[in-house]
Amino acid sequence: MSTCSSDSRDLDEPTAGTAATASTWLLLEQPGPWGAKALTSSHLDPALGRALEAAAKGTGVRVALIRRPGRHADRGTPTARQVYAAHTAPGNTWLHGATIRDPRRLLDVDFAALGKGDPRTFDSALRAGPHTGDPLALVCTNGKRDRCCALLGRPLAAELDASGVEGVWEVTHLGGHRFSPTLLVLPYGYAYGRAEAHGVKEILQQAREGRIVVEGCRGNSAWERPGQAAELAVRTEVREYAADALSVVRMDGAAPRWTVTVAHTDGRLWYVVVAQGAALPPRAESCGTSVLGSPAHMEVVAVRELTMATALAG
Image 1 (cartoon, rainbow, N blue to C red):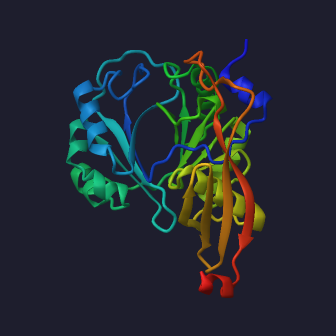
Image 2: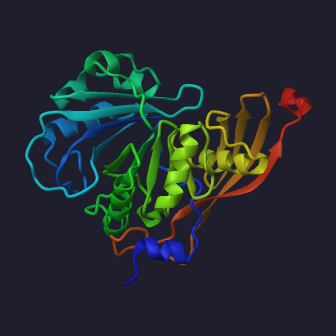
Image 3: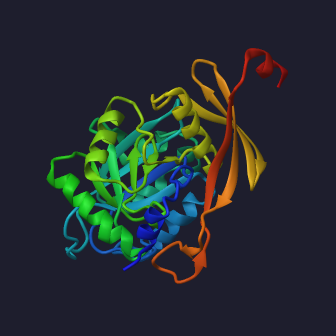
């Protein structure tokens, strides 16, 4: 039976430039079942879920629920929950964590500051601090949003966990169901599609060393989607895999065509031309809908390194 992920795979739909956009991720542990809109349709108090959504709006913070891999029996309200915040912009990448008993304390956090990369109110409100363990591997498993996430994501999370991979969590929503199983790696914020266990292990090993795997990468959530595609194109062009080496410093234009400026920490600059196309033929973008569409994809048209003279003239 055809699914949105099998259609996408069969059509070899490109993954670059398809990651969710968020400068900062805020993750709250919530065991048990999740609904399609998990912040307000799980065992988390829906009033708190709505308040978190309102607090995060327009700040660059994306709030998601996480749970340990495995069976999701209804065991009631947990006495303690893990919470993480991660900022993904190169040059100020960090991951902090805490254990809390009352999730309402999250409303004491300054979301605007968190979105800009300042963890101080997160740390003070929750007695949090820098995460010293392995990178986090977040696998989308919310079958209520799309069955592919459950059918493909849950086995992947379970396999990783059973093989002793540290930092594995199930997460409510990463976008791009058709690329299931989808993965987000924190603190660096790079998302991956069509993930397999052996590949995830390599991605996490490289992340421990501060490096990025480009194969299967959807992009860094710190950037808008044209910037994601442009940054990955430069990485491929110059074989630069250090996580914090590249930044998107400017984006000109609008759909369907942008010019993106990508900067290296060593001073080099690139102009990258990105065009928006439509993935054909039309198909359902999610198993949760029967409406046929043509998903937008980012096509890198040109990558040009700027000389010093060009940069000064610009």
